[in-house]
Length: 197
Length: 175
Image 1 (cartoon, rainbow over the protein chains, first blue to last red):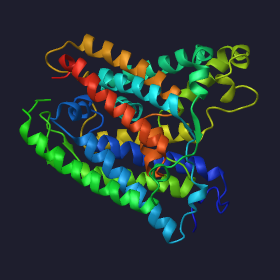
Image 2 (image 1 turned 180 degrees about the vertical axis):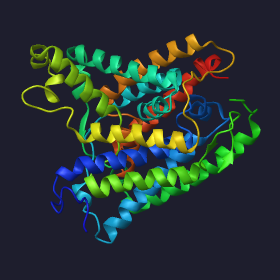
Image 3 (image 1 turned 120 degrees about the vertical axis):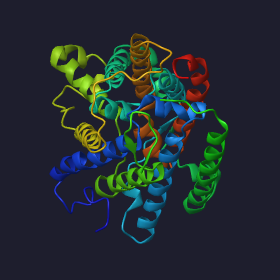
């Protein structure tokens, strides 16, 4: 079957939400089983005592990028039907910076705080509650941010397009960079003093 | 699988975890044509809640208007269903790996109270940032990277780059 299955109309769209639950379960399981319900494990990446975030995140990115290119090559997925979020440069950068500060302060990102909350970590539940407050504050003060939110619109640009290379070549370079980072992480971890957690 | 943590619970090998996560992400694109997400469900829940309490207010707010009011159903959304699955999947993993326990995880050098205050502050900032960047680490960064979106890469670098610097500022909370 040529994917995406739902948009191609082969299965009733009603199934989309059922698949959403199943896909979500896989997502939650992968995060929790890898240790992302622990803020001290996640934050270890920034101090060099545990690089689980780098390893899991970039392994997932190369598996999915390569997988989609292979599926597309064999005609199993219609790449043009995949959702690529339009880019708004200013929001992406400023929002990313705010998220980065929140990351180091709180020790979670939204997905990992859900996993932490699900296994009973109270700090995860509080982080999750904070997110609701943050979203609420943003929405209520939207007129203040509206200009920034809509500025720097670039459409759905790809990174290989920005470098002027093919998606396959970019992904190949990405794999090399990721493997380099995995070796680098192992090397740093050996040098850094162990942190009990 | 090997023991890494002092509390005796085990974690998957991170590369195996990454392959599972990447495969789930691939399936999301193959089945539904979209990536994974987390913050979108929070946004829709906030919009639905405000709409239930003050529908007039939603009509006059250009942001809520995109997601709620006018017959829109913010809670019947792919991301909301997916996040319910995330909670269930993480809970199942918690059972399997024997990690279900109510506790505040923090460095022995700080109090639980301090940890919770910083978790709250971090959550507020992260929630705010996701709206400005139209997605979080999973929705904007990871899912964007899978389809080679430039915006996804920029968001990823902004998040991890800033977090790396900010970690040094907040280091006393962690190590």
